[in-house]
Image (cartoon, rainbow, N blue to C red; front, side, top):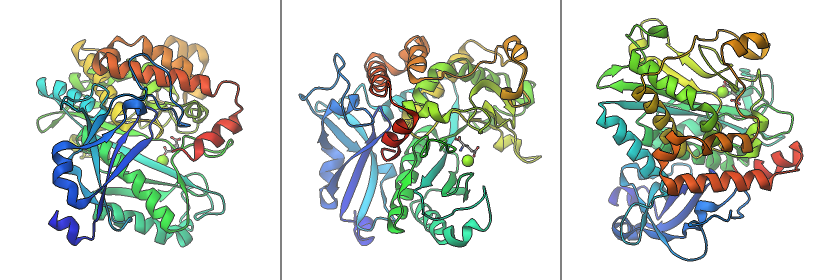
Length: 436
Ligand code: GLU
Ligand code: MG
């Protein structure tokens, strides 16, 4: 408290992410921190059923006006907000008033999956890439990845890096992305819970820095009907102690058998995982072929059109660098649901000692359809309703999440698919843009 007070902090923002992928918050004055850490602060469970437009899905056993939950800060991640003077931030776990973890709490879902892996002697390192767009007439117009876009956007991007660094988030790279006014920052791999927390903090930081520059950042899957989307790619590697299981084995591209089985489990569950990582109808407008969004269920070494891109890094670094990147997900996704579900799908692959199919070395959109069929390579679900159907059928994800959380996610996906029925592409993008 003394440190935060010295840094000028007066209020703590306590946030959690709902099933629609929106971060919700309560603010508590710093001098109440001891009480907050012990007893939390109240918040209605109705948010478990909230949709992207703040309407609520009706679902048995969820939502409604009755009851309360406690938001309890994880003090390990408590940090001042460098770009929002006077404020600190902490991610919240949600508990019942009796002190039991709320069965719909996403952070406790991640903790359960991390523990399941740990029971097998396994751990994971994960990291999210953060892409965002600022509105028309903003900074950084010009060609993709163009150096001169830094002429006007350089000071802005520097503020993003400085704020993240001051909050102990390790930045790996930052650049102007494909679209005018689109940018990306990547942060270092961490354990799964911290990776999801960092994704929340990174977005909030970008948003706040943007605001200070008079700009509005959007992390929505698509921000213009004809544009390129914002992805929320997830990097992951599986470890046994100090050994990276993505390297040093006799499997494809040097994977160990466990590393291969984990990725095979993820690939197998990808249609169901799409309902987690691409959670809103606008997500499916982003999932276009040949735009580096990885819309085919296949894997390939350094293949940016495969949903699962395998990366070995510069020669000699694979022992710590080798990892896989899930390219199909976006940032409408709740990052805790993403990491927890990916771990569950991967561990199921390990349990069954699955093998990966042959890798695919090209853009599947340009491949012969008979070849794709022979290799069992299909497009990921084309609509939220289709993805939600795969999720509903996923025994692996149902068991991992537990009936309460699984039921809430399915209710939200179903209601959101219905909410957007009959809307045009432009309307869907318009409604979604300012929500993420
Ligand atoms: N913006 C692309 C997407 O929608 C990704 C570009 C990249 O690979 O960095 O996922
Ligand atoms: Mg990118």
